[in-house]
Length: 159
Image (cartoon, rainbow, N blue to C red):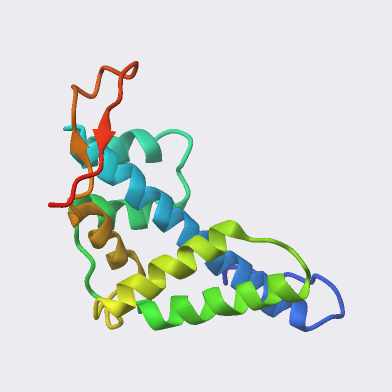
């Protein structure tokens, strides 16, 4: 975003909604990347190799390359887009969705993730840094080798 000027219509608030929706999409990409990278790490797949496959094929957009590289390397500094800003945009997109009577379950999920991360004191961190919690939580325990997709692969544990 910000690379070109687009004329949408005469309704100025539409520009705000487009910006908020773009930021919402970025947060859902980050959430999806965090989950996929956690799965790769837990399954013994090199996160950088996974990133290479993603970004050299279907997901070549900068958002995947940049945030994917941060998550793969677990490098979340320098902070450019802090969590309170992402959280604010998420709340605004949810409010717009409510006003338009449009359910947005992904926005609600991302809202909950922001809330949890900020409750853990991560408010001065980069938005993508909230993925650390997903990767560091010890809720996934492998029962069988990851190649056995016919059986039950994971169970929750309390460790």
